[in-house]
Image (cartoon, rainbow, N blue to C red):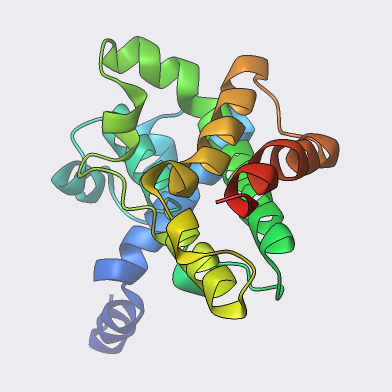
Length: 197
């Protein structure tokens, strides 16, 4: 390889956050195509254009890299927190995003992770440093600022309830939530509770 080819390769080599994002995207794609039981570090390395050694420097095994792919989407990136101008549509938007994230990763990995890791509570796997509820905090604070709900409505349970109901639905039925299910969670359960506070 010539010196200029080596320099070009170094220029295009990804590092840090860019490399990690490419790897975790490759994990999601591998899960979608192959499922958890057929996901390999070799496949992730090839799809992400890096080496297996790079993966093992960051993650000890398949379970850890899949958990990293899940955690990357929980909570939602700030730019993806819905802002439709009203609480109902914002909460529906959060649940739709959660639904999509779960389709991509969680549904394909959940049972394999539980079997492989065993015994650990799901919450400690997904939220190793505890839940921060950032997404719903933003959504509910906007609703407070718009005068839709009182500040007293922003309780720890109101911050977690929509995601807990959605996660329960997805895990119990092992399929994405329908639009009807999302609407029922928001309209029949969540809004009546949060609006009466």
